[in-house]
Length: 474
Image 1 (tube, rainbow, N blue to C red):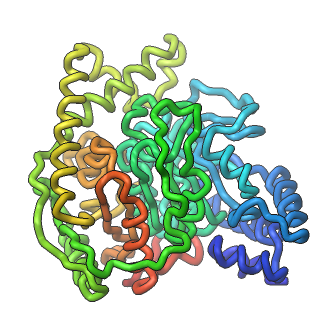
Image 2 (tube, rainbow, N blue to C red; image 1 turned 120 degrees about the horizontal axis):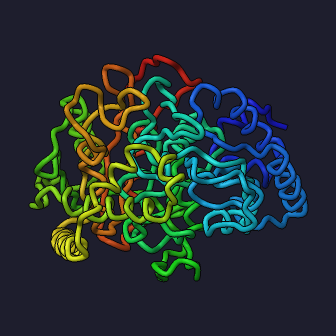
Image 3 (tube, one colour; image 1 turned 180 degrees about the vertical axis):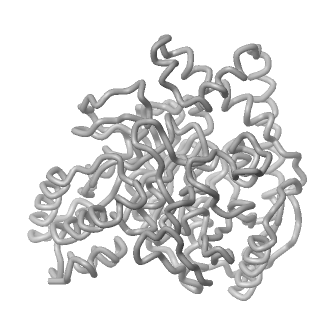
């Protein structure tokens, strides 16, 4: 049998091969994942709940199925995590909020339900800001999640716990959610692969307070693993009124990855972002690499104005809904930033929200027309490197809200288009850089194929251990 230390480094498809051959089993892989959590989680605080006993019980059941040659799915016995905004039967769901309790859930949310049906081993819950309200991960219940490359820096958010867990392979498949960049932002800051599917293709329950913007998706070290996870969670579920059918049978796990013949628009700034020159240089190199792999690169901006006011009208109204659902005692317990967002929406009229919705529709129509001429859009994932933990914006930046530095992510929540963040190097401070690929709605497999082709040709490097100050590389 393989050693736990080595098993803890492997991908889902590598573990599956070992299970099939009998060289390893899910119990060993689960123990390896739990060992990594025990070793690394104290430094980064990625997990807020760990279910050692339940995970090992599930792993033993999976091992028995594999021994009979009857696995439930290709991810049977693969260690995974669920973000703490989603319910998991037998675990609490705090959502990073003092307004919630440690009451144990008696049902599974759609992503947990689908993964459990597939035989995956749920290790626990990953940390998130309160109700996922911001682009970094800290809260008053569990504290902050640090970056796996430098624990004094933010992991991003709101799926920051999932991202740091993925970077350190504390489990293999990690579920995140993305209403304004909450998968792609932490993927970019921590140097892992993160994918936001087309809106409505990955069901959720309970809904986000801005459910019209939110998508469930994976954070992994390997895009093929992400596709394996999407093959399970990317299916219709009746609990989600926004859920749509038509999902691909294979999200990209078994396709031949390629960018050959694709026409890719490359926009360094989307026409309005202020990008760190180091990041711009790294993504310029990505464009060159994609061209060398057979893509046609066209430097062009999509011709949109920064839609931050449209996004804020929707996002802050969602915060207001949270506020109004709380009693006076609970309101005192809310994160002050979340409370401030709610206060900013206090005097808005219903017409303000409907005007924002109209702006969203017009933005979506513009981008749909743009993608008539291009197969993909290439941008940086983020305009800046990870900054100090426990801050919503970089200290001394003059910024106030996370949306001011998430220029490349939230526009595509407004349009409902799929997007991925792919690691592509490091800054001089040793912090990861990511690039983003976006496609027209329902072209998710096209993105997955392109990401796999790039990462096969230019495999990233991952941290061996969480560090207070880590040096990167290219």
